[in-house]
Length: 295
Image 1 (cartoon, rainbow, N blue to C red):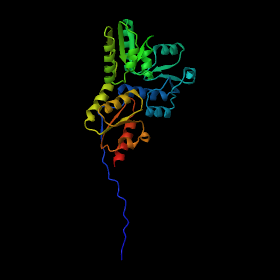
Image 2: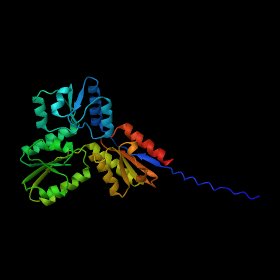
Image 3: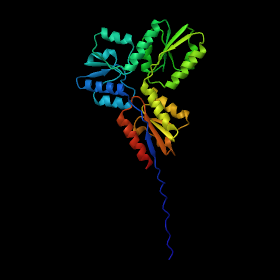
């Protein structure tokens, strides 16, 4: 008697993923303190943020659970007990206007942003053309540029080329910008305007340099990089660029639901880091997903 055995499909081979988390990632102490402060404030009455508190979907979801309203316009301030100035800050003129209108402000501007605003004001007082090395559409860069009239935001070399010559330029930088990018744009500025005096006060947050360095220390080891945070957010993009400079496949993941496994196809050693506003629970959730994806 002949017996025909059906051939069973082979199981896909298991793939073990080794995951290493950067030694410095996510929120620094200032960001954690600000988030804790608005959490406490939410327990004492209706809270509105004059903008987005922090550019991260995890933070946005957490504030929504607390009943905190974001992106609230001044015309609606009267509906709330507390009006919060976001972590990225606002221009001094805007803040003064709100204070004169007797709105109940709670200022949770980053100490690093305040320092940059003061530094830019001092440079302007010395007669320099004020510059902010940052992004045109970033609320923090706009808050810095609003310190004094005529401030220009330098995002790329096109902006540098469009500047009118001035005997003296005075520059600060967005706090979450890559120190490498700041250095490069500053070099381009000095090369183009060799006859001008260029004074730069470094206002990058130390935590940003620490995140970049911690990731760079893993790039020789890893096959791919995952950055937890929001795509388009300045610090996340800086970390993404650090990986791509070393030709490492990389992606930004805001939540496990947004992760596309095809992005890391074939990667066995993954470096995990996070942008300046990513919550710890977001990092843990993405880490658990990556480990499960490899099994």
